[in-house]
Length: 162
Image 1: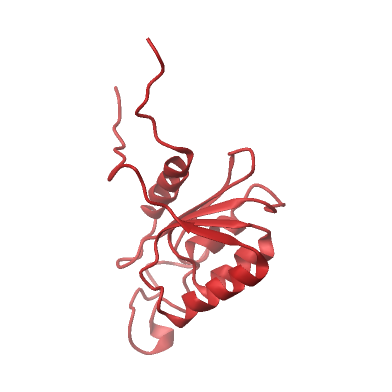
Image 2: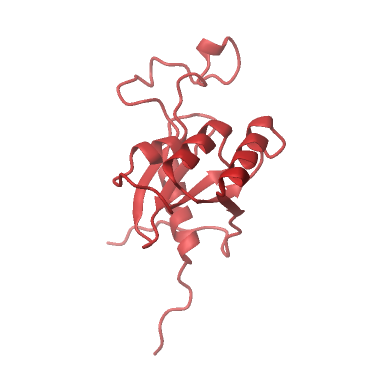
């Protein structure tokens, strides 16, 4: 008998960790997770979008529209930034970042500054927005490669075994 052939790829595995992390987000509209992996295929950081530690997510707003200070935008930390800040490694040079949604320009700055050199994403639904255009421009100038992951399977089932 040979080895199993239906196992998931490394890319699917690490993107699966990013997606699983996104399930921790309390944002009612957008849940994003991120996973940072070093050259040895070891996970060194994970994160999801949410408010900073110590900030009460029942007190701060989750709205998407309205007066800026009454929306989530001035308060939310994106998944990529949280993954960088939560990293167990002081050095992220040469790491890859897996994320469900293409990074915004603010996260792109943190990704570049941290030394991450590749971004793998699932969706680029905001490709025409100025902040994603800025991200791609900075990534190109800084030598950070990016590619869209096209998974070989439509779902990964988390099944608890007794």
